[in-house]
Length: 338
Image (tube, rainbow, N blue to C red):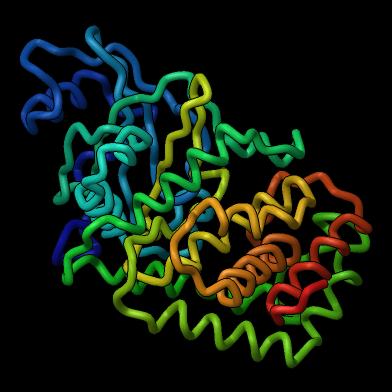
């Protein structure tokens, strides 16, 4: 891993499930992450991490989650990514002062910026909420919490020097606003589902749609200031434990339009359930001034890019179902009432 000031220098301490337990114990003790006399008994992979290396560290006293960012996307290591994204995540957690929201965030135990490592409480048997794509329903209890969390995040006081996170936004911009709308992006949709390419053609050939998407993409990149955004507010960042929702992985965070977080959230509720009324329900529950047209446009773009872009979801749907979702998404982008 690169260290500050020298991106080609490899950090001597690499987090992985193969890391020597005694060496890691000594390292984390010396750094003050572990208490005196606390020894690591086991390290394991807690789940699939997309952006970062993530391991569970079990000691004789507790269990904690350690994350380390590298200069590439962990799941797709041929894609470069800014290594300081772990700083953005840490800054996000420090910025949220709302006690109600903090109850839905993992507790930060320690941060080693020189090693790009973040340590947090282990949520234990919490479940990734990607299960809503399979269940095709969303609990009212969970939805109420997610809207409340979003509202609390967005109302947090944000410093003028909050990280702009432009490099990671540029990476995200490509995958949201550019690549899904290219006719030849090197990604075979028929490998995802036979016939999906044909369904995508009206979208990648629609110049009016692409102009609208480009405009929203420019807003995503250019806007400075606004509210504290999570930046990736979707089921892969939501966990639930005994009906209590937790929100993780805010490395895409920046100060921007609240409509982006809300649009992404609505898009995934819609894709999971095919229930378009979530758009009105979320905006009503949020109960703060919102640009409805912008929210709908961001939601529509998120649906389209998830269905015909590279960042596919565990979404088992027929071609007819996907066509319905895509058509509704296009209407949202253009603010039609369809």
